[in-house]
Amino acid sequence: MLALAPDAASQKAANGVSAPRKWSAMGVSGSALWGECAGSGSKPYQACVDLSEPAYRCSCPSRKFPCKHALGLLLLWSADGVPPADAPAAWAAEWLDARAEKAAKAEEKKAEKADKPAEKPSEKDEGRARQREERVAAGLSELERWLSDQVASGLSDARQTGLAEWSDLAKRLVDAQAPGLAGTFTGLTRVFRDESWPGRLLGEYAMVHLLAVAHRRAAELPGDLRETVRQRVGYQVAKETVLALPPIRDEWQVIALRDEERDRLLSRRVWLHGRATGRVALVLSFAPPGQALDASLVLGTRVDADVSYYPGAAPLRALIADRYGTAVPAKTPASGVNVEGVPQMIADVLTRDPWTESWPLVITGARVGRDGKEWCLLGDSGQGLRLHPSAGDPWKLIAVSGGHPVTVSVEWTPDGLRPLTTWDENDEVVVL
Image 1 (cartoon, rainbow, N blue to C red):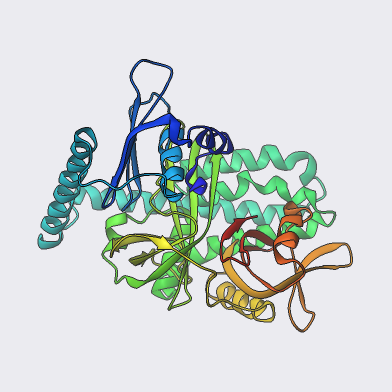
Image 2 (spheres, rainbow, N blue to C red; image 1 turned 90 degrees about the vertical axis):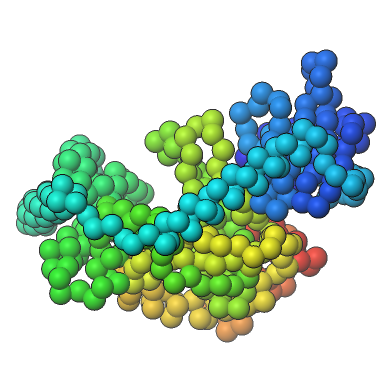
């Protein structure tokens, strides 16, 4: 339950209000969980959870979501501390009815939209699309010339002049409506952390050049690779377009979750693993500071659902299209890839999408060990995959494994594997 908390402070606060004496008029009926928690004022805070999502509502003034009262109530419920009831309290029933009405209207709109024939783009829309294509093409043509000049003049001054040049280039690419490529240059300073940074920088330039050339020759590419190139450049794909594609139904397990803040925007990355298909998926959600991120996918659970992937040569990002039933607790994934199979799997991904910078994996039968000074995940043959430097000393993973093979979810990157989660002897998920 604490995996639902927005931060560590909320987890601590939730434990503080999870004592039964703090609550009155508690109850659980079907998917409705509610209770009244004593606060600083004369009136208790009214907290309610719709367990089918989950979704939350509380009368407290907290901006965190879910708040400590909703989390504390969930902790009580998970410990069988909430008595069953015939029906929700009136105030809880009112909120649940409003949610059901809103969901019904959304389904009606979805059905109406599905029945309508697709509207043809207007001349004005077509003109805007052509104008953007021209601006992007011009911006990428300028980028190709800039890259040629950099290679011709050498990279020796990049450490002194690179930051200013990359910042200026990123602004020009934004003006050219190619924000995906602009983002590549805003993070290039990371190459200087490597002692062999000239080779690393040249490799980064080569991948950017490859993308620019691929966009210029997009008409010659297969359709799925063309979609990948356009999205890498910065073209957006509408959610409606994604949801209209054929979905994949499976029991999807939430194997990892990570929240980040960048440019005053909160993002949540949720990694899924299909129980039957073995496929992986990444679900992204965003929210401005102070607003709640999507909390419907809970770490350590699985849900029977249709997943629609964004189009591309190596599909990873996806949307949940439809759910069938509620989420249930999940055990250690039954399938995955062993250490020896990872290089070939990543090679297959990079063959389809050479610009891939990360890929989620469920690795089975892995041991933690060292290869020289580097920590690695070791397979039965002794082959090792090094961990990302940011992982530090993986004492938590070592403690959970106890020296035995374990199943680990990781994020592959060119610099090594980032451990995300593992599962202990009781099949409980452990965040690394």
